[in-house]
Amino acid sequence: MRPQRIALVTGANQGIGFALVEGLAARLEATDLVLLTGRNPERVAAASERLNGTAQVEGRVLDVTDAKAVADLAAELQAQYGGVDIVISNAIGPLSPDRTQAEQADQFIAVANGGTAAVLRSFAPVLRPAGRLIVVASSLGTLDNLDAKVQPLFEDGRTLDQIEQAVEDWRQSIHAGTHADQGWPDWINIPSKVAQVAAVRAVAATRRTEDLANGTLIASVCPGLVDTRASRPWFDDFSQARSPDEAVQPILDLILTDHVDPSTYGELIRDGKVLPY
Ligand SMILES: NC(=O)c1ccc[n+]([C@@H]2O[C@H](COP(=O)([O-])OP(=O)(O)OC[C@H]3O[C@@H](n4cnc5c(N)ncnc54)[C@H](OP(=O)(O)O)[C@@H]3O)[C@@H](O)[C@H]2O)c1
View 1 (tube, rainbow, N blue to C red):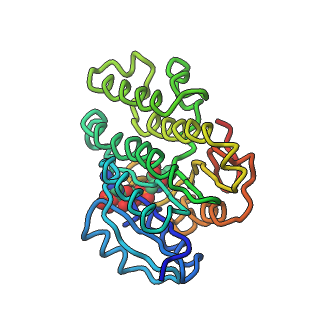
View 2 (tube, helix red, strand yellow):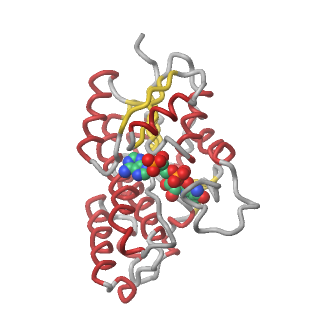
View 3 (cartoon, rainbow, N blue to C red):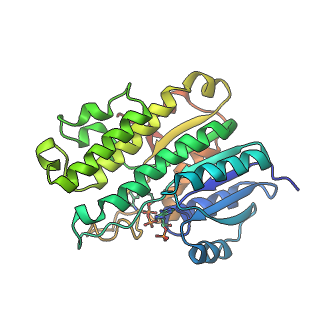
């Protein structure tokens, strides 16, 4: 039987992505399909087998650094189902304090920023009416986390192409050793998160009127501090951290509510509240 709603989560074989799939599988209907995607076939298959929700769950290999693979999957879902209803760009590569940021920058940026741009480019056009396209970012994604020298690169009014170029220039400055002089912070997670939020804002600005007219939401979200592989090496105190299950509930509430509050459209949202950019 053809599924009624189609949802897809990237980087979903562990951490917040897995909890998002688990939550969607529990809260959607048996007639809906959730695609649990990740880069590694064994890990995707193992994660899919662990799930036991109401909706159907299917594991699919999707390396988000492969923009063609992202585009092909979007085209496949468009051809097979007429589009998608819920897309969550969540993947992030491992980042270790034990290796230099420069050594890890290419892969980290390719996953977080290349992956987000690929999902925005390929999946925004195939969102069905009342669709949801959500990028899991962070409260580090607001402009005030950056030095004033580089903030203009991510201000409103920039296109997705311009934001991708700024990310590429930043990546090259890391390798050239000039990033600090230019105003970039050492921890690559910060510009990466600002660029993700800026990319969402750029795409949302091009479609706001039409999306709000048909009940579609494009936004970025902050899950708070969550105990996962990504966060463990960077923080000492997890006493206030959320479990992935706890962290995804406000995100799922945002996604699954019928009414889109126009004040949330294109914004970075934490626990249902807009964080000023
Ligand atoms: N944890 C926190 O405290 C926190 C706070 C704020 C924001 N966030 C954000 O939440 C999101 C999820 O983070 P997390 O903490 O759940 O991270 P995580 O536990 O490290 O999970 C990351 C997921 O991304 C996948 N991935 C890595 N490279 C990929 C690629 N090339 N293609 C597809 N998938 C890939 C990983 O797959 P493998 O298992 O194969 O590596 C894994 O499934 C990220 O955007 C992160 O920045 C997290």
